[in-house]
Amino acid sequence: MPLPKILLLGKNGQVGAALQRALAPLGEVVALDRSSQQQPPTRFGALCGDLADLDGLRATVNAVRPAVIVNAAAYTAVDRAESDTALARRINAAAPAVLAQTAAEHGAWLVHYSTDYVFDGSGTRAWCETDATGPLNAYGQTKLEGEQALAVAGARYLNFRTSWVYAAAGANFLNTMLRLAQERQTLSVVDDQWGVPTSADWLARVTAQVLAQVLGATPALPLAPTNPPTYTGTYHVVPTGEVTWHGYACHLLARAQQRQPAAFKVQQVQPVPTSAFPTPAPRPANSRLATTKFAHTFGLRLPPWQEDVDRLIDQRFGIQTP
Image (cartoon, rainbow, N blue to C red):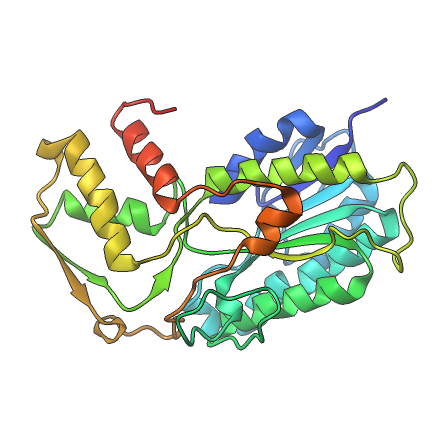
């Protein structure tokens, strides 16, 4: 029996790069980036991985006919989205709608990644999947519209909301802190926003574990869109625990200084309020996400957020951890 085809969009992003490795054992991964056309053409012809090209996306799914579409691409420039809302909406809302519609037509599963920014950040309780949404900014609003498009398309889908994603490469908070700590003696970090740091590698690994379960439970013949399996829906996917940006910075820098003290100049990490760093797009103060539904549905142990942070720091300084 041929391996199932998995169409991966956003292959060069933090999560997409990790997914290329994690999904490989599950099937034939056709991985695309946002370049309008893949050169040279694949065995399926010229394929499009640009989420702004809606016709190209539809043609690509029709050409590949995958068993699974994994959408790890998005418009993630949160502040720029305030003035570039049309493009953000096209990529974050219209493109997922096209992917969901074509997934339904082909009986494929769609894995989509969303964000804590669909909530308004109020309170101190971790958000559940059933809580009312209320985005504070254009980025969160367009991501919510993408989620809503999945729900009405009739596709079998897994919508994974996550937060504070980081990886060894790329622009993210962890890499920024490590760089600044080597340049400055004092850092100021926000201490009134709460969330959960999430490793792109871990997110890719659990995605692959979930897909292995889902594909194993999926019948050979596609289910009718009106009778989706119980797996279909929205899940919160983050490690356990919670922390502020300041607490996160203190933890990762303490670990890094243990591993290579001479590399860092930083002597003090000052806690400051969000108002110390005004931005065009408001940020939610509470980005905690409750993961009970995800853990129970798929029988997974979710690690503390510190586990993968420590592993990445150790690897950065040449120390291999299990």
